[in-house]
Amino acid sequence: MSKRIVSSDKVHKGRLPFAQATIAGDFMFVCCMGMRTDGKFTLGDARKQTQDAIDNIKALLAEAGGTLDDVVKCTVYVTDRAYWAPMNEVYFANFRENPPHRVSCIVDGLGSPECLVEIDATAYLGKP
Image 1 (cartoon, rainbow, N blue to C red):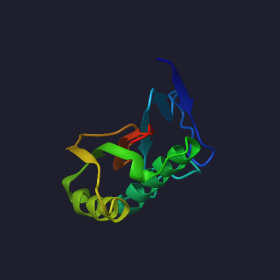
Image 2 (cartoon, one colour):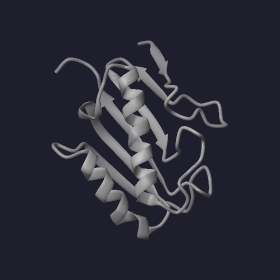
Image 3 (cartoon, helix red, strand yellow):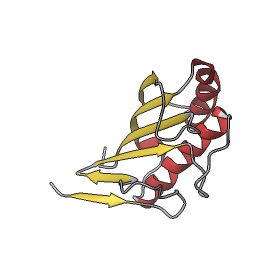
Image 4 (cartoon, rainbow, N blue to C red):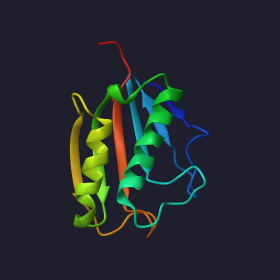
């Protein structure tokens, strides 16, 4: 099985050399922080960072011909329990019907001290 790297100009490339998304077979694996396209975070705003992360996931899925409806699993990381409710509010506003399987974790820190929310997603791009 071959793999293909996917990137989008709508998603900040970051400082580290890692793939924004990878397609392997019929699956796409996406990792997105709540970073805006200018490479900055909306400081202290878990709602905005959650929406930015989901918008980044949408942009990468679109590059591969997919949508949020193709997402089958997400892992959500937040750095403080206080961000749980705001993150959920935005998350479920985007995944309204048939939300994907989800694992959620409260972590001590993420790649940047400004990052409050990070979401990775797995999407199925094959035929049903």
